[in-house]
Each structure stands twice: as C-alpha cells, then as structure tokens.
Image 1 (cartoon, rainbow, N blue to C red):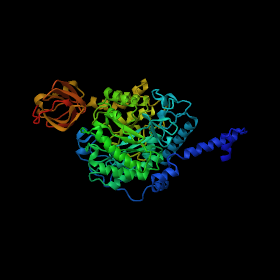
Image 2 (image 1 turned 180 degrees about the vertical axis):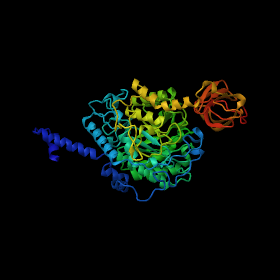
Image 3 (image 1 turned 135 degrees about the vertical axis):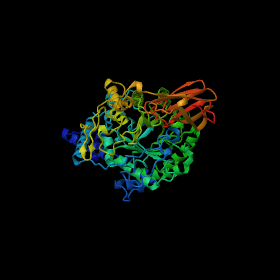
Image 4 (image 1 turned 90 degrees about the vertical axis):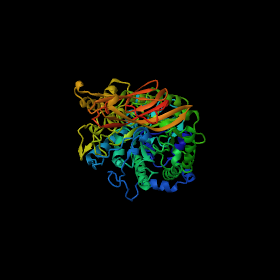
Length: 633
C-alpha cells in the first residue's frame, strides 16, 4: 500500500484497474470511519499532554464496575430538590421542584426495535457514502463540492468558502477558527443537540439507549451534561462528588459510542459569581482534562450562567485560571466560557476576549418567549465582530423555564443560528413539570420515546431537528402508537420558520398547550378578574448591581388572592421611587409607565382560588427601586 501511494504522489504513470482502484478507495474510507472517536492526538502529543492513563481508560471502552450512587432509574440515593434547585433558582425560578412521577419505569427496547435502529443507522451511513445526507438529519457531512440547502442553512459561506456546514461528530477534533467551529479540513461544524437537566436529579436519562436514540432518530450530534454546583445535591454543596463524576463518565462514554460530541457543564446558577467556587472548579476541570484528553469529542463549559452583576472582568480572570488548568493536560479541547447576565452579554466578551489560548468560545443563552430581537442583534453583532458564540442553552418558553411557548420567535432564533453556523443545545432532557422539558411529565420512560411521550417543547424540537412529526418508540416493550420512526430527517429540516409546513409543524407542537388553556375556562362569562384590593403582593429584592453606569435590580413577586372569591385572571401595579425601564421579565405581561410597572397574569398562572398564591413572577429593572417596606395592593 505504501509503495502504491508513493507512486501516485510521484506522478509516475501507472495503470490502475477500475476494480482495484475502487477497492483501495473503499479500504481507505473504512480506515477513516474506524477512527471516529478514539484519539485526537499523535502519540507525541499524547505524551506531551501526560495522558497515557486516560488513553488507556478510553481503550477499555467500558465503565467502572463500581455501582453508581445514582442509578439510571433515578431511585438510588436521589437527592431531593429544594426551591434553589429549579431552572433559574432565585434568579429566575424560585418555585419548588415537583419530583412526583419522575422515576423511570425501566423500559428497554426490544430486539426488533434495536434491529430497526441498526438498519436505519446503516441507511444513514450509506447516504454519507454518496454525499446525500443533509443538515436536517444531523449526520450528514457536506463535501467541498457543495452542500444541499439543508446544510447551507441560510447561505453564509464558511471559512473555506464552500458554503457548507458539517454537523456530524465524526468531524473529529474541533477547532475554533474566527467565529466558527471547524473540523481539521476547515469546514464549519454546527453542533445541534440537547442539554440534560441537573444530572443529580434526573440521572435516569444518562443511558446508552437514549443517547443512541437522540443521535439516530433525532439527528443530534451533541449532548450537554449539566452538573449544578450550588443547588441541592450540587457538586460544591454536599452532593456526592464521586457519584456525579461517575454520571459524567457514563455520559461521556455513551455520547462517544453514539457518535456525539459531549459538553461537561459546570452549571453555576444561584452561586452567581464563578469565583465562589473557583478552587473547586480548577480542581474539577484538572481532573476532567486528565481523564478525557484523548477524547476528541469532549468540550468543557466552565461557568454556565454568571449573574447577579458579575462583571466580564471577573469572569475573564476566573476563566484564564481554569483554562490554564485544562491546558496543562488537554492542549486543544474546545472550552466555552459563560458571559455576564445569565450568559447574555456576549458583546462585553467581544470587546475584550480571552487571549493567550486557542479554541475558546463564549456562551449565549436565550428563551424565546422572553428574549427577542435585541438579544438576537447582540448575538449577530458579536459574531460579526469575530466572537465565536455557542448557544449552550435555549428554550422556546420564557426565561423561568416555564410559561407559554413562543414558537414563532423560536423559529426566528433557529433560522439566525443556522444562517451563521452557530451551534445550539435545547434545555432540557427531562420530564420535569415545566414548559422547557422535552418529555411529558406524565411519561416515566427513560428511552424509546414516541411522539406522544413528548411535551409541546419536545415536539417542536423533534420536528425542527428532523423535519418530521413521526417518532417511533417503545411502551412497556411494545411499539409506540406514533410509528413510522425516522433515523434522520429530510434535507433542510433545520430551516425553521422558512416554509409553510414548518409553521404548521410549530403550530401542531403547541396545540396541546393551546387546547389546555382553552379548556381551563369554557365560558367567557365565567371569567372573574382580580385587581386592586383583591390581591396581596409580596415583592422581594433578589439582587442589585451596576453595569455601564446604570443600576439594575432583580425582583421576584408573589401574588395572593385575598378577595374572598375565586378568580380566573389578575392584574396589579408596582410603584418605584423613580422612573424605570424594564430589562427582563418572566411569568407575566409587563408594561412600564414612568415609575409604575403594570403586571397581568399569563394564561397558565391567572386562575387563583381564594387564598391561593402564584409566585416566581420576576422582573429586572433599570432605574428606580421598590420601597423597602412594600404593602401596596
């Protein structure tokens, strides 16, 4: 083989039978395919990184025999969740967690369904061989000769001028070039997938069958493992560190086996400032980098959502230390850094990016019902300025992780991200009883999901990823009713919001929610609005900070019905000591008039029986403040 290749390189004239040439090309393609996710560095680089023991662990391909403290079905030693453990904690979700009905029922796929998945996977590989797989399938690799409309995803050309975005884990070790992720050939790589919820609370979804299902049937090529740091069961607040690391190890290995990239997420939230647990973070990522330096699919996210006024200067200083710890063992893995204000102020990072290290990206998070054109423009302007942005968390509800879905705005976000080749992960892979969850809260399965097992958000994500509303699954060992499962999708499936059928799918995905709201009150005359003296308000200041010379204050409000009657909607006003402008809000409809904030109920929190309360109505304002003693009704 070597002499044959050398003859070709020396341009010597040789006669090559067509059959022999085909055999050689097939052999070479097979060798390339076999190198999918094993090692990403030469032996010299591995020795330089000091990762021989990690490489040996990767070659084993198995897990430790020690039994995990958190079992896959979520039963063993599963910690309870308190108010601080919810999606946005005191910042954006102070409501307590409802853990009822969340234990997996232990379904496994039948041999027949596993064979069907294998057959479908083989079909996708055949498509890749002929260069026909598109971005909608999540597995296709666009060639330099040009890609189909699905892969171009909006038409912006990549750094190599091919107009193609590659979105398969077999792209191998990734690099950051300019504002994009690229493979070794300079092709722009777009990762599209999902984030788990807190792995301490929902360990049952870290399982081999589900990860394969997400890749083969949903077309996902990345999964994010969210490990909370400060909440109940958090890594730095009494959680079982060894058990959490075992969950991460299983997640990394299952993702690798499924052909997906995997993000290890240091999920700061209620701790606000990453410096709070800087030493723990440095030690944790040192250990992770030692262990996974030989994996070409591992990405490190070192601070999920800095908040509470934490400045970019503080975040940058923290990041430089943690990145240095990672680079001591893993010289070129991609590292994602969170940005101020719950990873929204990427513009501040764009003005003063981290230097001295390569392969650094910056997180932006959005929730479509809260964050609209202003944040979209911030993201696009940062990318145009050369900042590599990764949307490691997004939802199609509001910023609390709950509330109504805004599928039209979500379609716009996806269209923009596809246009600029921005990677993204949806929040969250769980059955938590909130709008952001992909799985219906009534579903106890841990894999083999049918379309009917999904929440409204999950249905939207599935159809956006695949271009199809047909998802087969298993229920107690039997096929789900949906049937017609796909192992990929149609070309152009990511072009959300650009065609009539996509709009129809989005409407279908939210139909269950719409029907629920309509059925709550069937007669218009039965509606009873509450206002003024009907309500008692409790307004709590959560945090305050200064940014850009302006004062920001974050409040959370609870509304209680004291009218003596049941109500079906409510509205109220909060007065401030000076003029205000609204920066962010959730779980209500908000308007500002001078120093007064008018708030009315959403369709899902308007119904209040006498004496009943609804909370986590949040808002962040610039300017005036609510008086310390607030007794307004």
